[in-house]
Image (tube, rainbow, N blue to C red; front, side, top):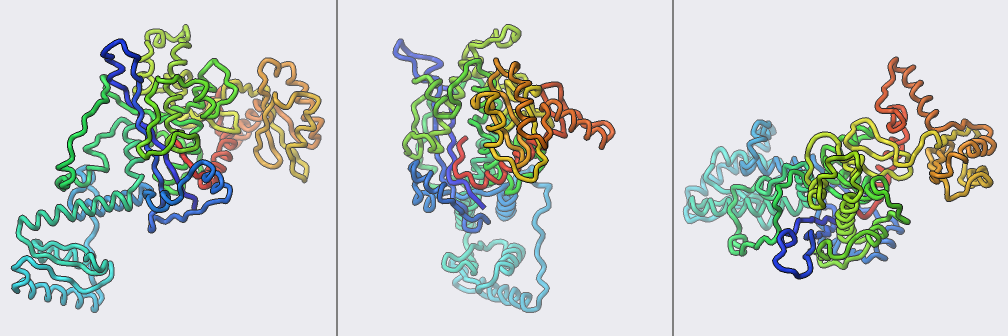
Length: 570
């Protein structure tokens, strides 16, 4: 029931002037950035209500949200099923359904059976036949049909297409329940049909499809199949001539070019699992599957080339950052002048938590992190040794080969997962690796059997004299189960036994085991149940089917939270 309010998208393109500098003046930015800040507001018949919590309203006010622009000028959005149904109906009406869909069954012709409906249609046909023989029809006039319901209007459209193929029908501008019939010359008919087709397409695009068209274009570009001539902006209106405004508009000079043909355009996010899931609930399907592997497959099929700058900073860089929030990383890493300065097409001001500016910061961060990763050049990676800076960035952006060659080093197709031990690996359908620095032998899984629920203060008391609070994290599974992760890598080996003892003494009616032993226990239960055990990639770096319950629980909570999040940044 909760809806997206803003979507920020920034497109980064190689600057041809940077590739071929003209003189010794300061080098121009390597990338040109074009930022778009979309305000989304559900269509009246879109099937979604708008619900805002007081805290969300306060947050949005504090960050300059213009609610008037949102409600008055926000564009609608549509999920895939609704969008495809609308496109199919338009394509059938104007016979512009793409050839790839020609094999699909066209909408069946309706059959009138009620006596009153049959009599109504026959009377309308009789009246139009008489009108066709009169002076008004020969003079190119129009005839207004009687008011009727939606079903009968469809019957009339189909009947007139068969009995009066030369007439032009369109909805009356004064009454949506009436049809106006025009008897025009061949030239007038063609002009009228073109105008109707173009007008209805623009209405469909702006009132029904809305942001779905942008979402689909982003997905196609990410999959390497985008073509402007075959996009939703042109695919279904190829028979319509350009409007007068389009004819008169001067051609825009392109100052941006790229020597290398891109195969896939990567999607860059920062800590983006929530953003991606939330976007899918609006533009793919309102309800996502509860099975984690199925959800991963949908994400990977929609966006097969993703980089999460949170992963690049935490899993791929050798540097340690005080904070890995987007704004702090941007201030610490981004080199001024490397990318064109922020300039939103919506005219908004560059400020954190503005969707457009957040997307701009994410892209700049990706570029500058890529330059840092180039400096790593592991000695066992011959491919990396052969790459200069530009080639390395090309490798990040345009690599479209199979497998996951860059996954471990560059974070390709891996997403940061808060409050868990794992990193999401979209390239692997059933396995997610442990996050960097996680040793399952020094992670403790605690399940209590007391009637009362555990609270955080109970854990702090149990470990008070054992380990400093800043040296461990608490991950909650449910009110009776939690996980302790030792985060101070240099000292955790010497504290491991003491932490185990402290947890056992603090929670006497409980089971305290290392996460490694917990996995083995779950695996043995799975083996007992199935006879073989669905072992996926457990060898100190992966997980097994039995343990995916931890991620599944988190994923289910994400689905609930995703409907409450009010801001998405790509």
